[in-house]
Image 1 (cartoon, helix red, strand yellow):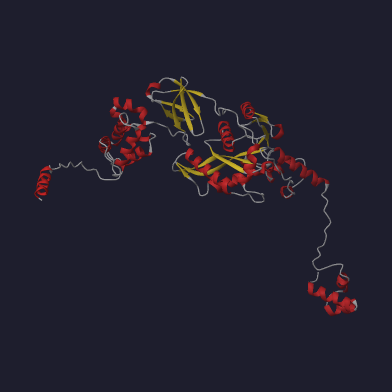
Image 2: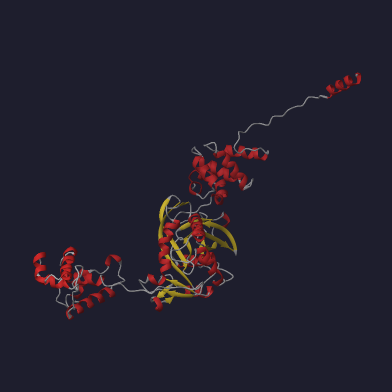
Length: 494
């Protein structure tokens, strides 16, 4: 091997008619080297071609056995996943091979060329791709891993994201319905991973659907297509979407009071994405391509399908029924009765006799009991000694104004005062009561008496928000008619 400067001098000797012997002597290199580069058949950057090595039959048999072992154990739990050592243990009785050799063969297997994929292209309204992922968010003051349902139309790349309470079949149905309602239409086919909530057995084209999922498919008139295992390329758009939604709606980490509040934030970011985003290598912005795709979407059915089957629950003596390890309160007249519970993504509905009794906000954390203090007021009137330790007064769900009153009110009787404030709601509207509570909170140390004072002033039509309260000043006007008489007499004299 020579450098380019030496090569240039060899070629110059050739052109100038210098013999190979004289050239080799002048450059201090062998005549064989001069001969190699003399006619320009070789250059200094030529690399030696190494003949392809042929694996022995024994090595091929060993590698085939190792590959078969990994294939048979590919679904093992992460902590029990196969490795080079376990592969060696599995085949050492059949082959005379050392552990280090098996490690080398395993490395060669992993370094093989990956499978090649064909780029996919979809027509408007043809396909919807969906998947789950988990992303961190702060809900009610605590950081949680939140189940996130992702959907994308691969033609326009319009997206939909939903935060849901879990990854059950009910939430999966809810996410699908929310996505189709967001796009205002359904599609011909929906691509899924082999989700346990949807697949009874098998995988890919051999997947056998759950019966409830089959009913859902029939109601929304689409064809479910299940992906092969480890084949994210088959639905590449949504695979990228899981990463996209992290940056789109969860960076920085959002802080919401409830799951529903977090979903409102996510939908706002989805709207902004649709308005302003353009995908690289796409001919037009997402908004324009979605307008092109919208007419091709299929119409939705006249009504939603129930995502969760209704369940029955008994209202206990503490005025609560249980659903998903959480207590929900109802008015006292339902104690001992069996009600029907309908679970939604962001709410829990209690029905009795075909009528909706009460709708609770669904908490994200199981076991965060939903006591409504108003439900307990009749009992608290009868058992006033229980006010000080009543859990519905300590931890019950309240509007923000009353929540602040509970936090700011001081004294050992703060919960008695809160109960008395709630009882005022029987005689005034909720808006008037909350307005009075807000005024009392402005003092920094609100009390029941202050709320009563503001309500009394409200009844007397005083503006009390933001200004000091003062008594009305009555002005008695003097009789000025005598002055008019004197004025007229003077004019007459003239």
